[in-house]
Length: 231
Ligand code: ZN
Image 1 (cartoon, rainbow, N blue to C red):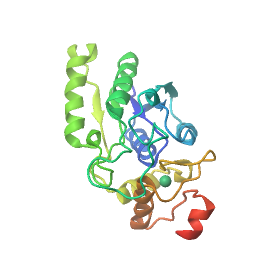
Image 2 (image 1 turned 45 degrees about the horizontal axis):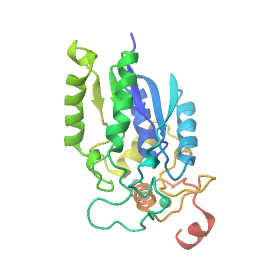
Image 3 (image 1 turned 135 degrees about the horizontal axis):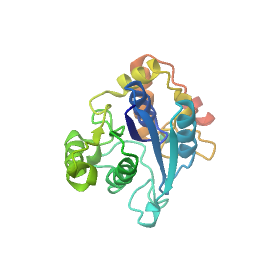
Image 4 (image 1 turned 60 degrees about the vertical axis):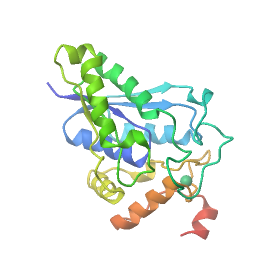
């Protein structure tokens, strides 16, 4: 029987690539996205595009009102998205986000009797989030093993983070080879209603630098004014 996996799909560049890698490895993919009160719901549209283009077995969208807690520039409109990386963990960190997302992925994976969970975290070209590090992935694997019926009964649910040691340029090259349409992904922390990227936030910066380093034309749809000022 074909292996199956739950793949966290935000609609960003990394998760779209992660989904393509899971597919290439032969997994039947069940994509999971969240409407968690993020600033830009255009990324949910991007996730829908990716799920469709990459022909997943199923795509679920769960509502998680993390905006009720706030505490992040991404979920609280009173906290501004910074345009340059400062010291330490940035205000775009969403408290415990990956732990919360993975908990839901794990529940679904157990129901599906899935073999793996894929998450597109990356420890190189990233913003300094603690829940994107290899030790985090290892610790979560231990949790999966002891916290689930599957784990106790010896049915391994493997937590896969294929991008963890890749640079942004490597991620883009890999996804391009696998046919990912990056014009239908959204990385910007403050995209507008049409899904146009600001071109200036930390996430836009990492993405632009990644395409430049990969030597691949950046298909991102930026706001016209930004594109004129910062080509
Ligand atoms: Zn941006």
